[in-house]
Length: 340
Length: 260
Image 1 (cartoon, rainbow over the protein chains, first blue to last red):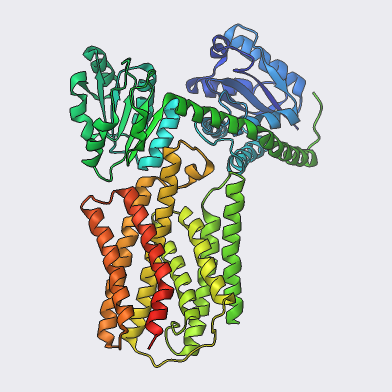
Image 2: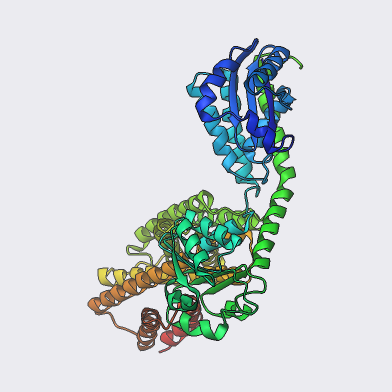
């Protein structure tokens, strides 16, 4: 019995190509039915995400199966798919790498594991999997867990927004009920605010020199817009401040913030200053309960996280190789693997 | 047999400590089951030891400095298991294990009289002594949480994103844990004093004054916090300094109270 993987991903096909071959959830059953009619193929799982479309199949005749898959893709789209095709060992290795996030655009991202799990369970529910594929995917989930637990491949955040969310979590714990103020409706501040909203912050106040822009952003993220002249009035009630105005000088100063902090003892304030020139005086970070991060420090943390993840890749690959050998040995003991 | 139980507890705590140091060094520390299990094992072994010791002495085993050190170490683990796990402060275990280990080590290898001493029992005195020690366990763990708070706050202020930052609890949770532990400590200390009064035992003046001063110190910290004069950072600092003061002054109090 052979395990095969045929597919295309963000490394070998641009989005214009990938979107042609994507298999949506609504057409999964039909596509799996069609795949299962291919000669020599006994079972299949289709993994279709924004970055990849991959077919994992168990087959007794790899050549015919590959031809069948190519033909099927051509029939569906009218195009020849630029497929990569892996033999048993490389297919197993590929799936383990994919599930562990090593083949992702952002190394170590964890969303892919959920997508692999969903692809497998959908195929299993439709009766499209075989004993070998069941064993392979269960093993892949174990590998992903092992790699995540034993290495730092998922450590840290890889975008300014997620770093801000992580840091907010380390300051406040639970973010639900927290209030955010956005000063200056820039693109990065909007993304950061959206990240925080997705983690359950209670209210967002937007203030911008152009009120219309503040109102528009407030409406989009379900917040409240206030005039720029009045932002200080709402300041006492917020937990997180995101600044990204185009002001040529600091608008949040130490002497201005010190009395405000005294009026709210025991309540920390997290300031994310995304503006250049900076909106917040650096000395503000010395105030008790204030945690100030500017764009350089946030990007520094992102770089550090990416570096940490990259440095872990070799260890992950070693762990995966070990698991691949173990799985292929199991397969060899049970069935002969024919070469592609 | 009882010595083996203590050695087993020490080894278990060393295991927890070694794992923490190794994992922190490798930048891959994940607080969780290992620390909790190691502490549970140590706690079970020490409970067995205290039970056997209590049987030998015919009272709560608090009749010598050797007994007190072990009981204190046991109370640290007890408070951790009750408070640490309940509030998901599992990293507290990584900080508690060395403290408990150190006390056990001093008890076992220090120049202390380890002979069991049988005493006439008085339930109020035993309650007073046992609760005092558990109260100091809570106050000690409040100090440990205080150290964790100061460490986490420093990492956040200095923008030092490390394995430790990801694994230390949020500072807001730590501040809440300090307050809870302080309240628990002072409540137990108050009940212990009440039990002491009910026992009508002869009280040494130095010990009495020192105990009241310690109670007053912690009450003052809590009052300052309650009225906003001790925000979390200051609260953590006061709690750590307070406990260091207690530890440092203990030998002096012991010396003065033993003088005729």
